Image (cartoon, rainbow, N blue to C red; front, side, top):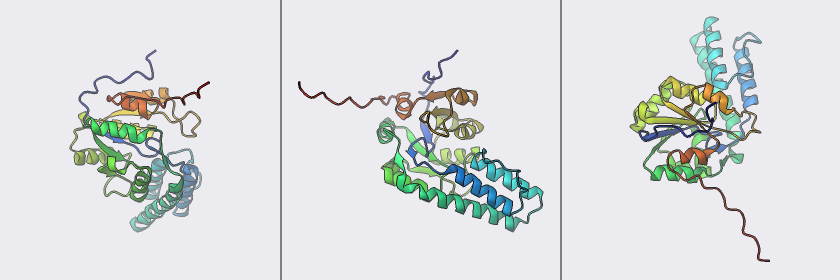
Length: 251
């Protein structure tokens, strides 16, 4: 059986690295169950029959399925836009509640600085709103590393649409065959692979309620799976240093 944590081959051609935000670079502990329940309640209020949407689905899939069902039911376009706005406004509000407790994942700044120093172009593709994304990056000291950013608030398609990734790479001046997407969820891989971009997964702590096992990432098409962000950095020549143990007091 292949090693789940074997370094990826052929990294020399990579120029651009596109990161996910939450879970990959910052830990915000968003209340995703509440977000999903709110989206379902709003969808049902606008005409989705009860029971058609599941709280186990990712939020992008819930929104996609709700719009499809409402379209099939003949909901006027104006009401459809109203549902999408109400759902996104509700998600934004719940998301911003997490901002005060949002912190960078261990060694994020160190890894990003090492990648930037080695000449990689860094981009951010997130399902978060522009306000949350920029505020979280500013708060954690990571904003200077990301001159290229697309969020849920950006005009045009949004993640996990492969077109959202292609638009970001175009802005970065990076061809799809010279890019890699880094994320902690299967949705990140779904977006990357649909755009024909390599996907490297980074594992969350095993106790996380949204932890994805390395085998699932591999089955989903990940080229590599890293145990954490420092190990991911080591794939690109950033030393995966660990904190030194405290010095012993003299006897």
